Image (tube, rainbow, N blue to C red; front, side):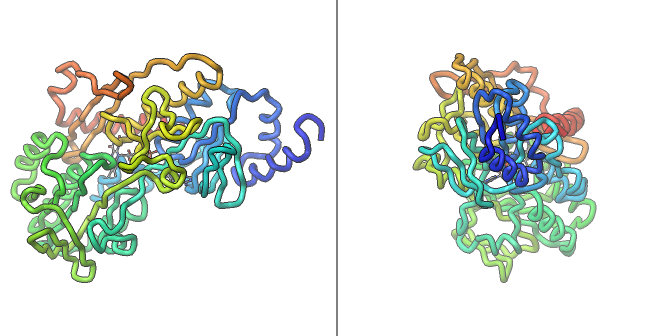
Length: 424
Ligand SMILES: Cc1cc2nc3c(=O)[nH]c(=O)nc-3n(C[C@H](O)[C@H](O)[C@H](O)COP(=O)(O)OP(=O)(O)OC[C@H]3O[C@@H](n4cnc5c(N)ncnc54)[C@H](O)[C@@H]3O)c2cc1C
């Protein structure tokens, strides 16, 4: 077999079958001098953007990206799908661009990480070795909080907090409900994916109801007492949807404690709300594989070294995206991509024995208030005293932050971040 050896060729061919890349292509790559093997777990915004950035920065790094899903459905813009402003196909991204970039895409799920052997085991049976591992599995849900809310309950009271089937299920319920019904959104407390998104969802559902079911209303049962840019959201609700959205804070008995799917009832400490549609967003934690691998700390999420995103708990393993604790950075797609780029630079530097560059992170979250009006929440962050701190932004970038221009910017941002993260 010559240069790469028969056993390695057979292993590459088997992997190629799982990844959809030709065995000969992998064998050709195997002949190049390899600076290091980087395996990425999870091909969402974080993992996919990191794989692409590694490929851009250094062609001699062997990059494998593992995800069980052939295509990826984005949560950004999924609230538009719920309310008929888009279809699911328009937020579904193919992996073709990632494949074209020369990344070995393995369609499988990582079942276990062996940190001392530096290997990952796939559910399909293969084992992949790594020099550096990037774990980007997103979130999992903490079931039975509220009591009775589990995976089965999510079929009749969809969370729609991972886009795809759940989005379609909630959209179908909104379409089917009679005029005059109440649509409840239950918001959890604690760290969560995209904190402004429940209120964007309330806005777009109100827009839909105002046009199609004007006697209906949106009821937000909140386990929090404040939410991001509450002033702008509530101002927009008063002018765009007067009387249509009611928000009940935690101190006003807004926290949902229990659900009963049979009677479509949400129970708070002192009240019961029987509703037509219940969107229950459960509390969240990092993807299961991160917890199983020992990457999460006692408070649930994965602590990292701010400059490199290397785990504080396990050497040579990095955690990016929603799963990590990035201090002041929100759990958003734009933050995930910013972290992914820094993590890729850090890995290239660490594998090459160079100094890790100083990061500056950006994030911008757009929330649609109506199809032609959006709110933007920009952020800039830097590492200060080993933590990621929010930097003061120039007044101009935060002063005018909602309106028609932001709605156009939101659509532009969405196209850009998709292209950046999935090369397609
Ligand atoms: C309704 C809604 C609206 C949003 N809108 C915005 C917005 O406008 N702007 C914004 O910036 N953010 C927005 N977000 C947040 C954004 O979706 C997330 O922050 C982002 O998806 C996080 O990316 P991630 O890569 O960390 O996780 P994910 O996108 O969840 O990707 C994780 C990937 O890991 C894979 N995976 C999990 N476990 C394994 C395993 N064991 N083996 C292999 N693969 C695995 C999964 O299949 C998945 O593809 C929104 C979120 C919601 C819910």
